[in-house]
Amino acid sequence: MESYLDDDFAELMEAFDQTLHRFVRSQVATDQATQDIVQDVWYGFFRSLDRGAIIEDPEAWLYRSARNRVIDAYRKIKPVEMEDEALEGFENDASPEDDLYREEFFDQLEAALDELPEAQRIVFMHNVVEGVTLREIAEVEDEDLKTIISRKRY
Image (cartoon, rainbow, N blue to C red; front, side, top):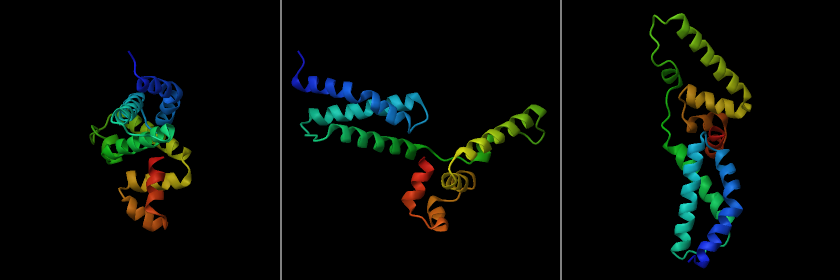
């Protein structure tokens, strides 16, 4: 026998699950990450209700929780040096195929960077490619640190 809480929860899931998936998917790189985050959000929501929490605005709670979990997921990602990762396994005596791969990789990277807005491209290039800290970028660009963090995330 379902309780009143179960009925309300099922209605909320029906109302918000698809849009919540779309929201999270627009923020993360993979479908698996989307599934994990959305599942974690619903689990947290249900546990809060189960513990007797009163949630005034369920939609706002769900999206705020999803946004926080997306941010947490990005914080867990360890930055890597682009050149080291991209060229890993290449020797000094690279074959023509390796040279072609390297050229194609950097062409694709350049094309992707060209699609970014200028402000986001600057932050990405300085931070990921050159290894400049976000705080240093904020000082040089005379911007708030949170603005720089946001530009990198997008």
